[in-house]
Length: 158
Image (cartoon, rainbow, N blue to C red; front, side, top):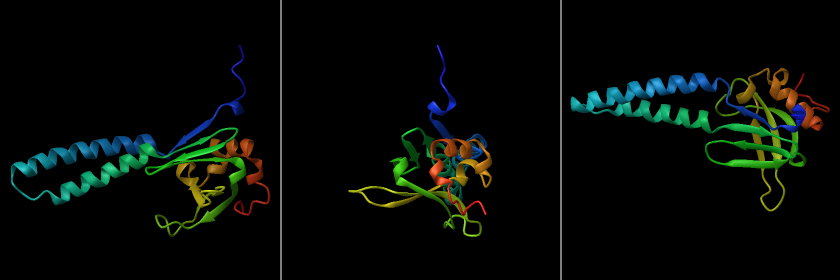
């Protein structure tokens, strides 16, 4: 029984440094909860501690929920709010953009234009999954195999 080729399996990618962020978040949340209980016992307003609990809970949500699945038919991008499933024909090109989160350094990602009835443009940031050198990592290799049309006339490589 043959296991099949590598290209027949979907590529699943999670946020870069996911394990580190989860471990740090769990430690900080645990310490914050202990601090919250100590502050509540002392009858002090726990505003600062509540802020850290909310902030690190959001970080945990972002880290756990974001993923990119690449297969033969297309890709699936999940974040904390939604899941976007598209065919390769809807993935138009790779582009560098400046995002609000990272104004100083442009991020590279996929520009997706969905078909009717929900015709919208989406941007999937690839640097969150493989860093600035995502093209030389497994993510870039799998994208090159599954969607070579994205790398033709690629100006982002300059």
